[in-house]
Image (cartoon, rainbow, N blue to C red; front, side):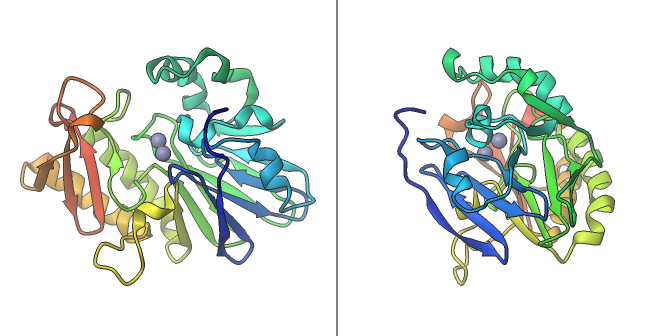
Length: 268
Ligand SMILES: [Zn+2]
Ligand SMILES: [Zn+2]
């Protein structure tokens, strides 16, 4: 990361939610409760992200990571307290080896405080709730911020241009559908919240035909898309050949607001 650009775009995504965007459009967010501040993900830009985020709060700062991909957790070692779902902690070593993370940038499992589906992070005056959605990684989660009425979705349902399910270690479509159905029930009380994805800019510009922000409806559409894929009747195209990450060529399927990049051999 030393040679990565130290350039961040910073704005306010919602009242009380600071939004940082790094040089590859990885998004991370700072929220503050009565007792502490919490950064959701770190991006993978240059410099020290803990120091960058600390400038926006005087509360003790902790980190919650949506999943163990380098574009979301690259700066985790700068923090004393780091939350991540247990399943991604267990997979960490294997994933870092697979993505050829340089030895000196690898994270150790001992750094992380494990979360489960339903775990809460107590901010003092409200809680941040963890909702698991395995698929993109085995330990992918959404964080529900009940104080600011925001759901941080990481890469669990994509950020508006398709959830990446073509990577090694991703669920099959049929397993993903089962987990989406469980998530829908847990997420229903928060359906009117603002949803913020792990790559904010991928949703496009408001007012353009491509604009597709993450929302509760996208999760519902994703279930319908899985149904269509499992029944064999769905809209499908070949995906960029350099983003297949293996021998099999990835495809992209879509329904409504939902899109999925996947491998045809990993539907069932
Ligand atoms: Zn990811
Ligand atoms: Zn990502």
